[in-house]
Length: 350
Image 1 (cartoon, rainbow, N blue to C red):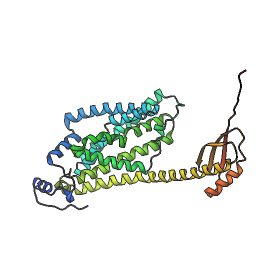
Image 2: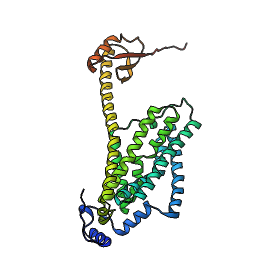
Image 3: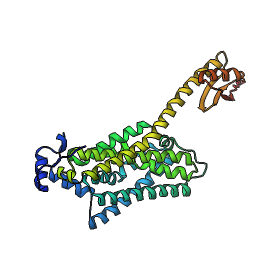
Image 4: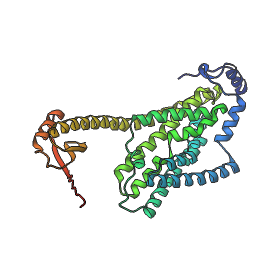
């Protein structure tokens, strides 16, 4: 990325940049007045910042509580409500905007807000879970769905982050921000981290944390790019702060790359598990052919295959099934068959 100097005075350079619709012939430009409105919205100062923090803290606490109750109860509608209430998108976009504007103090301030908020929100979710949820509480599908992120989640965060930044710059599409909040879902993964730690499921907590960090890194990076190419940062400022801007974008890109590696690994693992499970289910159907049994579940984990069947008669020997699966997977397997006997009784009235 190269920025060339044009003119001498900062104001004159900005006017010239606006006349050319911004850096690199930007497709979408922003007027100086709108830029000032966005700055005031993203970067409150002095007493306004204190008031902003109070409002932010109240809404964040409420959104975390709503998310915790929705996740524990498995209610999708309640979780969506938490997404709509959550205010966390604003400081993330502020970090991205400060990054491309060469404002290190503002960038650091709002990055601190994000970090402190994240830690305290996870602790709140943990405390509520330890206080109210029984230790043997079944883990809802709403929780589980946020513990195995894949590259699909990365794609959602990319699109939602771009939409959020664009809606911030362009007043005309500001009504889309509520949809962005639902799409990117910042608070539910964060609440899931605290919940799963509270339930002693650290393995699930790590997956939820990866999803949350993915959302953070991607929103900051893609938000910064949108602010850059909509002309939020005047060209004269980009020229003056070019080294700082490049460094910030490079760090953000590295953060996205860092979360992409485990996401790709998880995605490949999911593909492999789905493929193996489908292959195993087909072999189980063949194994049960000619019996009155039917399979109710097949799970594959490494070299262990668990098969659940139901029916009135005992299953056939599992060794032939193990041989078929070993040939299908090209490695030895252990098969465990769980049989639920189904009995039918009839009676006639006299």
